[in-house]
View: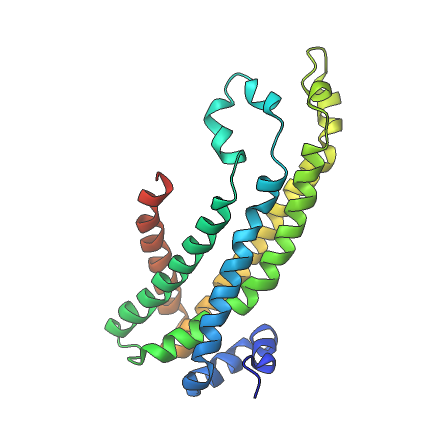
Length: 227
């Protein structure tokens, strides 16, 4: 028997409510798969920053006044990929643990394995989404790094000329933003559906739990963002 049940993974895309209900009733069968989905999505998520690692900006850009503060954002080492992977794993585990403990206190499901199995299957959606955004990021960042800095930073260049050079980069950046917002909404809705199914909550209660967990995880991650 194959490790991955691609039929149930496909159903998370097409009929999520039915898929989450089936996983809830067969948590022993799908628990390991749910953990694997979290790990795979975290690995792929780590490679989302690969464009900034393999295609660094020319040092000429950081000689501009005011760019010193953002230099660390655009200059990354290979270790950043590992840190991104570990951060994603930790965030996923902390989030699902909170969904379990807080949900249980709110008269939800008391079986932690059911909660983990159902909620972590949302990562089946995260995997293709991250791949798509990573590809667009590569193209977007290549559009910027392929521009000769001496041309873009020439003293006599007009605003219109600079915008013309950056036309592809700006268009792709807007596309990344639109995709990111759209996919984030999709994942948010699927998470609410998963919480409703596994805990037996109404939409409002599930929505509140998802928002609460997101706030808690964001607060927990603040100290690490300054590390």
